[in-house]
Length: 221
Image (cartoon, helix red, strand yellow):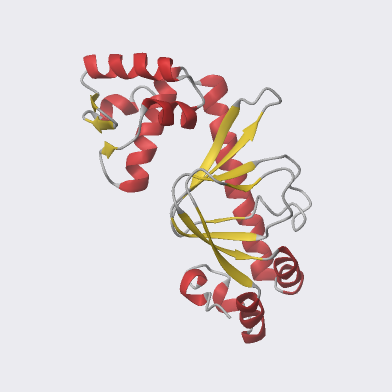
């Protein structure tokens, strides 16, 4: 049995679980490791349940019939996701995919257990709805940026969000990776970064983007 309290005790619902509920969650949790680039969840996968990132990172995206991907949001260490659990929350109705961005270790609590605890514990039920709402909000923000922001604003927004996420001004990513995250083409990202360099907003080295003018980037959003 996995002691999941190490991972979940910082969430507000945890103190409101009974000892039996904590034991049930622990007994029905597994740790799994996924190599970089592997698919964790897709439209043909069985319902996963609650996913918690122990280490590494995940990317959630949608895919068109032509194979074009639209990144919805990303998850890092210590974050949870329940969008892979449409069997638990029936209101989740759109198809999404989840892939490992790097070697990633996950804690997964199976869907049946999540469903049972949701039905009997109001605090856990509220947590799952709030979690789904936050992820949907992130997805909607992505779609809003894609539809209404010019490429300069989308790129600036992404660079600043990476800084907020990591606290580091050196963003170690290729143009191809950035293009994937902001739903654009590599050539477009390269041209836009070149303009950012000319304007003194960033410095670009091989595989690294260094933020130089935070206020200037904010003004583009």
